[in-house]
Image (cartoon, rainbow, N blue to C red):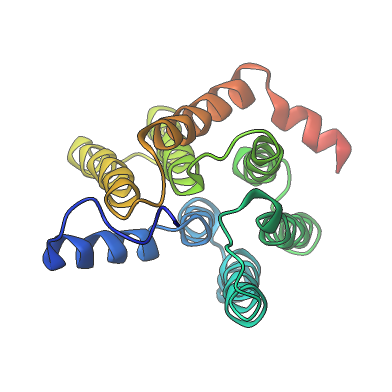
Length: 213
């Protein structure tokens, strides 16, 4: 039986909010809004980020699930069927980062290279363990916002930081309530998101990506 067939509880009200949270705070929306928040410059840049960070990867995922897997009665959460969406997302992100660097002159930005790194991290971990990518993306996004606040590159009031932390926790609840993931998978995704950020920052991997690109 699929672990998403039955939610933890029977409340239609809670199930509605859990589904809404899972849809609205998905990894592609996280990376799009993060990019716009940190380095939006022109309308063209925002539209390009919308296309490559949300429309292509999320649209490709939906088409893959609806037109391919469902017709063959296959399940996207099985490990072997998750690779295509990951590869599509990584390719789209890298293309956009290259456009940002060479067309919009967004060069040597911490956020640009971290976006590539966290997508690669999510892809490679999926080979060995199924974790919550929702939690990986939202916790990594929170870590980046917290870092931006403390370096004053993007200051944010404390109450907004608290609200965002509660939102990350709510996303974890939604994934558990819908049985999209076990508690361990949610915890694994959260720790990977925060840990990936601190690993990237501690070893100053943005310098490595700058030389690479």
